Image (cartoon, rainbow, N blue to C red):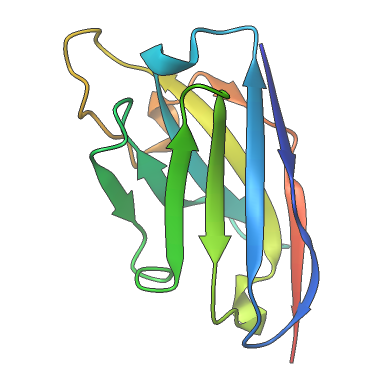
Length: 128
């Protein structure tokens, strides 16, 4: 299984970035997808999650209203659009995949413990 995250970079405060994660080696529609981030010296934290059928999403309080998670099941990709970025959003952003019960298409996970596979991360740096 591979989760390849991309789209990070250096952006000025107030700017936007679109992160993308391409999944391979798994049946993508069987997995809840999520984004987490880890800033230097801090613990990894939840950012956003989306259900298998894309009908259910959840966001962290810190990014609610400034981010949008989406998935394309035909392409096995999940994206995270980040708007109105702040210097405190600087972190490595990771995508993750968590198996869900086949019958529960609206399941979402906001805990890292629910995720089975992780990507390598993409660095987002927001300058002030």
